[in-house]
Image 1: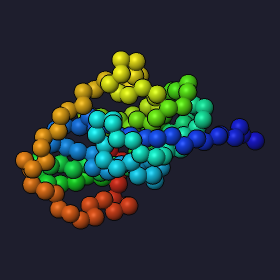
Image 2 (image 1 turned 90 degrees about the vertical axis):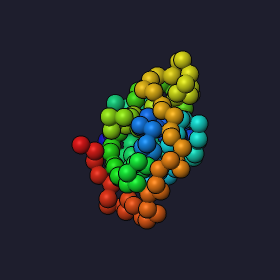
Image 3 (image 1 turned 45 degrees about the horizontal axis):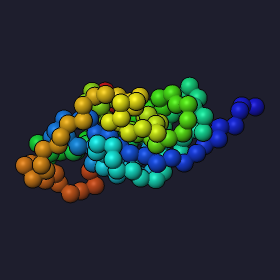
Image 4 (image 1 turned 120 degrees about the vertical axis):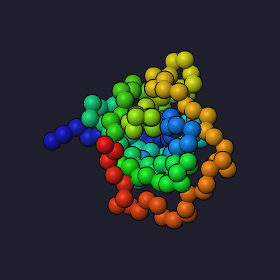
Length: 149
């Protein structure tokens, strides 16, 4: 019989590295709502991750991206491996410009010199009122999330 994996609740935050006219408006980790991703300062409770890192440890991430320039939405879903960690910390979910997602567990924030996550710049977002408002609808029904190419 396999070793029992002990799970622990940790706070989580989303870090939005997308272009200034794109925004991760909502994200979920294993079904738990992380709300809007930003620069890594908004913290919500809680994601569940293994107490001790294992090579196959992963989370399911769903996210919705607003394109403020075009007034459109896109919906995504991906299973993401957790970066190696030696101690529990906050879960930082990074949404990268190339469509990638990284999940970093750390006791340091992304702007700390000892942070081990991505160093991809976090753009200053343009004021939203410069763009037309995307339609207020249920833009990403549960089955609309897709795996990015």
